[in-house]
Length: 448
Image (cartoon, rainbow, N blue to C red; front, side, top):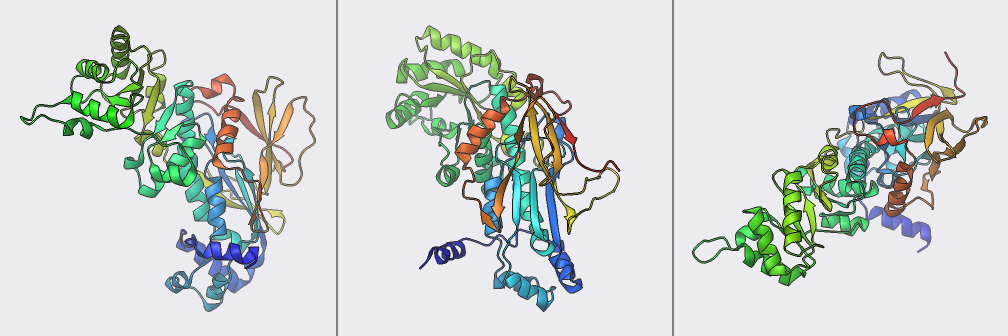
């Protein structure tokens, strides 16, 4: 069996992504095949008109998953039978469907701003139009999580954060959310499937149920027994949850059982700032100077920022990160911008678009701080007349339907994102609602 046959066999072992779509994509396809416009050369673009909740920047995530989904976008006979509203000509087209076009876009982990050309998809109208929903569903969800997670990482100011939101979202979204949060800088996940699938460090110890389980024969709670068993199982480096009953007594019990080299204690309730200071003082009085304090309990970026200066060594974040911290979608759209080399654009009020396939670069001061984003016609990079340093943002992702060989993995994307965050002006990292951290300028387009 040759490599092409191996690839085909591997593909057929994977589920089809073709029905992760909306019906109107198929009805447009059907009509375009009937009127002959299906073969026209087109360019579609993914961008956001604004940043959710007036945030200062967004983070691109989901690129790797999206490219894999395009590769698996092949129609099965069962799917074609379900789409019984299509003509036989269209059904036959779907039987042979395979994306053979070009995809260019921002790297995973890249920062984006309003009107950044995050993704450009080029090919025939037929092969591009049917990809809208699967592309947007992945990029909107993952970028929303990554954008929220990045703000939390900034607020944590170097302290580690664990993603623990699996129980607060769809079971598959839990896995992909862990991936997006890791790219944005989270250190670990509680989700075992995400750890297995993506190589993200897994973390977790025990819940309140573990402490509540341990009672004496007469029903009296026995917190020490719970702690003792956990330490015997996981070692003294474990983290003990000390707020099931009385926190002060819980800390005393933890150190009595584990000794002063206990790895950590976790607080999951109450005023975390006040409690962390009290617990730190108690731990120091007991000689547990190296025992860390980990906090959880409905944290978001604002709560994390509010704990700056408090003796908190790490965070566990659940609901807020997997739901985009108030912005569960990035608000990205997929729009036709070019037909047979001619720019096309909507003129609807509030939804204006600029026609033509686009690429972008970012300019930087000598200090490495980003100044602005410059968007220009695809393939026509403007002459660099500025004294600032420039860096291209648009990179090839697929060529002739094939994934480019040097597409970054999530660990490389994580490192890349960390480097890009350091280029933002300091005010761009503020959590307050304001204008984008840098502005976007269009160059080389008609003014009318």
